[in-house]
Amino acid sequence: MKIKESLKTHGQWVGKWTFILAATGSAVGLGNIWGFPYKAGTNGGGAFVLIYLACILIVGLPIMMSEIFLGRRSGTSPVNALRIAAHDTNSSQSWRFVGWSGLAAGIFILSFYSVIAGICINYIFIAAQSSEIVNSAEKFNEVTSSPYNLLFWHSLFIFLTAFIVSLGIKSGIERMVKILMPMLGFLLIFMVISSAINGDFNKAIEFLFAPDFDQVNSQTFLSAMGQAFFSLSLGMGSIMAYGAYMPKDENIVSTSFSVGSLDTLVAILAGLAIFPIIFAFNMEPNSGPGLVFISILTAFNQMEFGNFLGPIFFILLTIAALSSSISLLEPSVAYFAEKQILSRKSSAIAISLFAWTLGIGSALSFNLLSDFYIYDRNFLDFMDFIANQILLPLGGMLIAIFVGWFIPDNLIKEETGDFALFKLWKFFIKFVAPTAVFIIFVSQFI
Image (cartoon, rainbow, N blue to C red; front, side, top):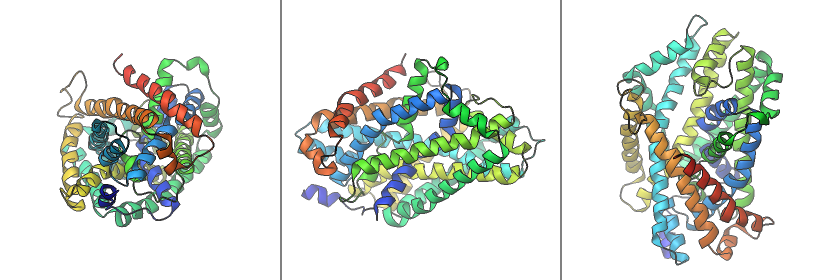
């Protein structure tokens, strides 16, 4: 107990909804507002949505509850949370390396996530000045072909992230999520209403909610499972770190369902904001990552009030990205602060600088290093592969195995209570979740 208490130096969230907003902010990011719509578009629409929802329930929520349990029980960063849990259950201290993999994944993701988020900031101004005479594909190539342009916006986004995290839990992260998340919700609802007025809303509803199982194949299941896993920020230590600041009187089960529900709601609303516009202007919903930066900008260029709606959309993307980026940085900063290696501010600066340096390679992979490949991938794609396709599923699978097989039920119930679906959750965390994540992991190498 003395070890645990000595490490609880970060403070706690104030109020139940603060944790829900913070965890939802961690989960909601470009993966929901950008990734979900184009993955739905390329995987059969409604069929993908149904499979995605099933994956959230049987894989995402069980692992999320496990991460919150580990974080709140110790009140520490992921590395120390796993070290303490291993000590208390007489398990191998090697489990703490799962925490280390989460920290590494968070930094790697932040490095290239910041580059994409920087482009989103850039597009706020581009959309405000754009017109239908602008070729959106050419504009995207112009934006990404300039290393100086990408590095400027990448640097700005990293600075904003580091500044918020350096202020601490209450003055920094908590204060910002209370501002960012309501703004995100308001802007998203505004964009859905705008799309219903200006776009083909009926066709979007049919596309998202009328499943076409003829288009479903094994790749659809893998894509839906991967999207559910990534969109909830699992395996990277963020939810575990945020769980460490969760007061003991809050219910882990109901809170997890609230976060999962809000995260899914944002993804669905993003689809309802984007697809009516896509269909109204006879564009393809399966245009991949270019859906946001090329197709959507083209549509805004042709819309009445497009110069007003376009910037709002990209502000929405930027807010979502920032709410996630602070959760990517926090686990590493928390660890360094706990170990008193550096102060919180110095940790935030040092780790952000490291992520910024890695991000240079991702920014240059659009231009100067476009011909540089590591195992048939450019630098950005390679970092994405290591983090999202190896470290995250591996970390999530090991967390499920550790909690499901090594943590006694009585220790779990001390934090969660003896809730009605405990046996069902235990079955999912022991067998279903690790098996499903293992399938994701192995699929990357086939």
